Structures are given as structure tokens and as C-alpha cells.
Length: 492
Image (cartoon, rainbow, N blue to C red; front, top):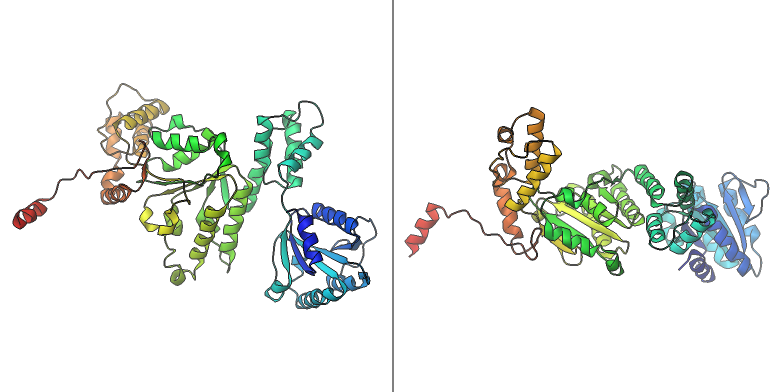
């Protein structure tokens, strides 16, 4: 439902305290003014600069005292009419004891003479004393039809506004922008390139991320060609994110592997392969020092993610962010648990076209409800690369660092892609052969052998295989100890 239709219902039902959350006050006021003309309601607005003003009338500044503005609404009442007072950015004044008391009395008395108090604010900040007296409405962002109309108003010359699939790409990029931001992005694109393109739109969206400080945008040039192996994972994600699949809601994937097997790099390459920007969420950056700030920043970050759709959301090493959920009540007064609950609810219920890619080095540290069905489209295990995958990775990094492709390579039975890259990079830096550079690389399969084995045992039969279609299967090649064999012999 639109703002005006919902607002009309609440006025008719005599909800005399209404809070409208909006970043576009002029647009919201224009919509309300149109509704009031149609319904023959009297509308007056107030802000600290202009004071009381009749809607859509340019007059000298009225009384700028916020307390006087609240009391003035009774003077607008008529025996048979409806009077509405819109208070712009009133969240800046509402913490005052006198203001709170005046609002409470006016909202209650407004039911007798049909006078309505409307707070128009970019955020909802209702004191506890007034929570039960206000209903909260949201001024929705422009939809695709409205964005198209804005673009048509700006791009008036032939060829300035593309059509067909290219227009759909522009609308995808502009989704989540306010009307003011969309006008600016379209105008900037016309100035730079002579027509509307997604490039300037994404630049403006990047500014939103910078201002929030909660997310970062990755728009590199990597592709699947720069990532050896992971054949099944690449095919799965490419197919599930094809345009024809957009009629159905995709969720995302959870990637489990030892460190250095390409989880993070895969997230970054996926965006280019499917034509989406990659947003990186640092859960640690959501933590705030004030009571309730962490939860608020979590909700704000998820709102920004929804506004940036369609996109890929990358959450790296997620087990480190939410591993303490079980003991959150004792360690941080439940902050982590509430943040985790907000994220789970969003992951399960969001309708925006956001594909989540979460990575983990130890999924056993995550609460079991995190990996249940319908939270992710698939849970993949990325094992240490096989010989075929390693040959691809060696060739890729030998070429990247300008090394001799004919030289001997180290015996790399249990190396990860990151370790192969490190060996090639060191060979180039030290100007030595790969065999000599190998002396400076200690693989994770050696330094964390027990952890790698536990990961493989957990993933066995539980995860999808990132290299081959189907379920991941692994048999521990380690022979039984002599002690175990003697124990079996004694039993027999």
C-alpha cells in the first residue's frame, strides 16, 4: 500500500498520533497535501526554520517555538472537519519533558476534535512515554515505474534513455535510491556519458556505503577463469543466479573449508560472473559502545543491503562473528544473540534480490539453526585442491608472476591455492626457483592437520562437493595405530 492510502485509513480510524519515517520530506508533504485536498482536510506543517505554514502556501515564517506549534493545532479544528499538523524533524525536540507532555495531551484530546499530530522524521525515535500513542508508517522508496518516470523526465532527448534489457539493468541499479538520489544519479550519468547508464548510479550507491561505514563495495575485475577448480560450485551459483531464475527467491550459499582454499576469492569473482556488485559485511564493525547501538547498526546494515539489491552479500569467517551466541547472555548481556537473531530473521524472510555468500573455517562453532534448510540454497565443502586443480593453479600463478613455466615444481600433496600463490610470489620476489621458494612455505595441512581432519570428517556426507556434483565424501587414509590393531587382536 502507498503512504497516502495507509495514512487515509489511520486518519479515518482516528489514530491521532502518526509517525512517518521518510528521508524525502517534500515528497511526503506533497503526497499528504494532495490527499488532504481530495478529502477536504486542513493541513499545516511546521519546521524550526519556517515555523507554522499552511500546506503548499508560501508565507512569512510563523511561530518557530515547537511547544507553541503543538498547542496551535487546536486552533485549526472545526466542528465538522479534520485538522492535521505535520511536524518535520521533530525527533530533535521530542526528548524534552515539556514537549513529551504536550504531545501526549494533544494526541489524547485530538480524538475529541479530530486534530492529528504527524511527526515526519528520517528515523523512528519515540520516547517510551509516547510509544503507545503513535503508529509508525513508512514512506516507501520509488518503485520501478516511478524510477522510469524520473528517468524519462530527465532524459528528454532521443537515445539518452536506453530501452529493453539495458533499461532493466539501469532500474536494477537504481533500486533503493530515493527520488532525490535517482534524479542526481541520472543527471550525472547524462553529463558524463550523454545517456543514462548504471555506472554513475553505482557510484552514488557507493557513497551510501561510505557514509554508513557498515559495508564495503568490491568491484574488482576477477572472474572464474582466475580461480582454479571448484567446478561444481561455479556451475551451481551461475545457474541459480541466471536471469530466468529470478522469478524464484534465491537465498545464498555457505562455504566451509580450511583456510586458503579460495572461499573469499570465489565470493569476489562471483559478482563479475553474474553482473552484480559484491558487498562485504564486517560483523565486527556493527558493534557499538552504547546500549542498543549494535542491534540498531545491524538493522541499518541489512536495510542498506536490501536497498543495494540485486547484489551479492559476502560475510567472511562468519563463525568468528557469531560463535559466542550461546554464551551471549553471560558475556555481553545478550547483544550477540540479538544481532544473530536479527540476521537470521532477515536471512529467512528478506524478499530483496540479495544472494548471501557466507564463509566459515569451522561450522561446528555456529549455532545449528544457522545452517538449516531454506536459510541457504546449499552448503559446500571446499577441500584441499586435487592434482588437476593444482596444475591449473600452478599454471595461473606462474604466469601471473612471470616465472619460467618449464621449471620443476615442488611436491605439493596437501597445498592450498593460497600456498601455491605464496610460493610463486616468493619465487618472484627472491628471484629463486620454485623449489627454493618452497622452503619458505609451511602448508596449513601441516600446521593445522588435526583441524583439517576434523573439518573433513564433519563435512563427510553433510555438505555438497565444490569440485564434483553431489555430496562430499572423504575416507581418512591414515592407517590405524599399532595400539588399535593390538586391541582388536586381543578382542578376537
